[in-house]
Amino acid sequence: MNFRRLFLILTPYTWLLVFFLIPFAIVFKIALSDYAISIPPYTPQLDLSAGWEGVKSFFSDLDFENFTFLASDALYYSAYLSSLKIAAIATLITLLVGYPVAYGMAQSSDEWRPTLMMLVILPFWTSFLIRVYAWIGILSNEGFLNQALMGIGLIDSPLTILNTNVAVYVGIVYTYLPFMVLPIYSALEKLDGSLIEAAEDLGCSRAQAFWLVTIPLSKPGIIAGCFLVFIPALGEFVIPSLLGGSSTLMIGKVLFEEFFSNRDWPVASAVAVVLLLILIIPIILFQRNEQKQREAGL
Amino acid sequence: MNRKFTWFNATSLTLGFTFLYLPMIILVIFSFNESKLVTVWAGFSTKWYGELLQNDAFLNAAWVTLKVAVLSSTLATILGTLAAYVMVRAGRFRGRTLFSGMIYAPLVMPEVITGLAMLLLFIAIGLDRGVTTIVLAHTTFTMCYVSVVVSSRLVTFDQSLEEAALDLGCTPFDAFKSVTLPIIAPAVISGWLLAFTLSLDDLVIASFAAGPSSTTLPMKIFSSVRLGVSPEINALSTLMISIVTVGVITASLISKRSIAKQRADEQAAVRT
Image (cartoon, rainbow over all chains, first blue to last red; front, side):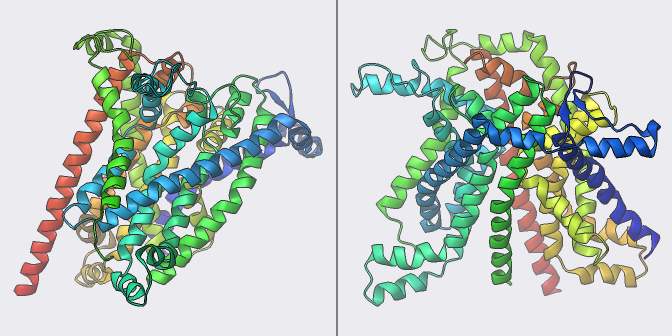
């Protein structure tokens, strides 16, 4: 191995080790520590000046207390559960909204496609925070939606939407829609039109051909899109804290508050570790789907 | 796909894009509202833009954000391009699986976890929190995006060009500089742009990594938005939306032109 190659590999490698892997090791370590009123607010501290004895007592003081605490406190349990529920339902709605859009894009003429593509990507470059913020003015009691609904006489008194779970769903669907549309579109775009013609020639109605041919062949895109929405939605912090109410329990928000408001670092770290463990399953499934796609593409 | 563009397609596209764009259009329109009440129209005015420019807290935050974004995206582009090169070209080496894991993991990691981990590291090594720590944190999570963008370009390009340069007497560095880099340049540039916007936009990781004296624009926006909608924030949002729109459209025009030029060059090369 020559020196230049070593340097090339070591530069990004060291960076990621120091700023990505080691921080996670620290999170795990603090998750096993205890809360203490000190700076930093946890114990035990690794005391290297005490030599080997210090290292030994450090390890013997680590325990799984925080995890038993998480398991025994109903708040965390229901926060994880409701995050999973909100992320799953929001993913499903995003799919139902996104699929027709992707389908329409794939059906449109070649000269329109680049423009439509750009229109889908453009919001992705726009600030996430601003896109969430835009909905506050729409969904609030005196907001545009209520004004419009009362204007056409559909309702008499304003609906409370902001600061409820409904607003959180709207926020997730809105901000993550491009992540759903793009992979489905790229799957539909590759689809061979003669297959649908064949299905129709063989006696399928249009709807049947859609169900039996188009949907199954766009499945990789659907799966990719769902994971791309579900995974980030699960740990979402901005949307529940701006659009959700005090009853909206999402684990990203709980972690943030545990850390900044309660200053309980060990519990916050334990919350993070459990969230990671929950996320590993969908992440592995997503990677498998991508891998299969890549192999099929070659 | 067989193209039968139906009414159903037209309706779903119209509804979909209305849903995507209407909230932002409303936001932009109401940034020119005279009234302090953001949901009631009271006549055209640009006074909120004036007030925004008088607001030192916002201007300072914008300056911090810009500094962080430029520094971190530049660092991230260098490290991310190196990482992509290692992934695609360095062949097998010990710890390659861990390396690729560390490149892909930040892409799917919830921001709260990345932010928490970063903060705990900074405290453990006793680094004072401020602009430096935000730059370090942003560099780490955006370099992974850069490396994904750049490696997808590296995979598709013909390695024999590089080998030819080496055979003709280039040093590996020269070959990289005069053959590889010009070919992957569009991907490197879009990687930089992606890193830049991600850094501009990030609230959660910055909140963890920032010290009391360094507030970024998203942090400032977040804390004032929590108190409710304000016309000043609408004005600020409008400015940010227009900058991004102009940027994205320019970038796509440039890339369209460079693709056209590349095609013309290739055709000319075939003819001669």
